[in-house]
Image (cartoon, rainbow, N blue to C red; front, top):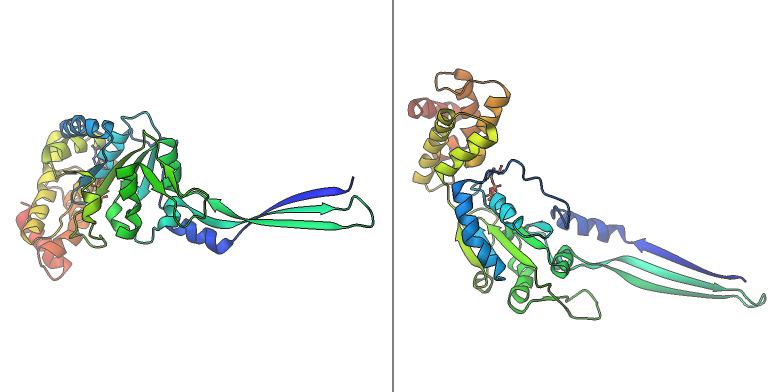
Length: 323
Ligand SMILES: Nc1ncnc2c1ncn2[C@@H]1O[C@H](COP(=O)(O)OP(=O)(O)OP(=O)(O)O)[C@@H](O)[C@H]1O
């Protein structure tokens, strides 16, 4: 018997890398657990969770919006974990396109059949087929994952248009994928939590009204009490130490708000607390090492918001205000 069949899969390298560069921002796909051990369930978080969970249970998508570092992603992850479903995290970016979300052709598969059964007859038959790689959204929508689409407004409105029919008709259009079917039905458990920064932030597209109309938008704001709880539990600082750090970042934040600019967030306070704890730096206004750390972490905000021309001037502002 001299009949041989070979299968060959070729992947076009350029297509693959293009695909990865933009979709590589998708993290935690499917069933990989998210490490949320250091999440602090503050009173504010409890209140928000009990308010928002029923909306998701009823099948409506949520949209958490607010300034950077206010805890939108952390809350979205916490909320998503309330459902017994894998969580998929997708990061918006201007390069993301439909291929990243619904898939595209990423190479070819070829079947080769060589028939030499009769010695004098040699027959070779090759069939080449395009290889379709489904995008992230296909997997999540098909299997009923909870999708967190972080900073979705950093992707273009054209890309986000896909969500219009997902959220309204429960179907995922498969245009451009050369599939037999033109759409796919979305799993009944598929839930979406969007997060975004307000439109005045750099690198953010205006969101189409039609999409906003389909979302339940909740504004998340800075909350001093919650920040204090997080600093204490996450970094292990004392209440008075947390208060001092928050007083300092708060002063700079207020100076920024006065100038209509975005000031330091909880991230800056977490950095100060973590560095001081790990380096055994006493958190006290009299300790020069501590104020040095604060100045280093807050210097970019100081220069931007206090309209001081150089770092020295900004530091003088700091000495005067933080005393
Ligand atoms: N409840 C919480 N418990 C523990 N850490 C938190 C909590 N809320 C926020 N954080 C921490 O604060 C920082 C900022 O939070 P997060 O990234 O969720 O903010 P964000 O609003 O999504 O910011 P951005 O708009 O820049 O994406 C992160 O380091 C996060 O781990």
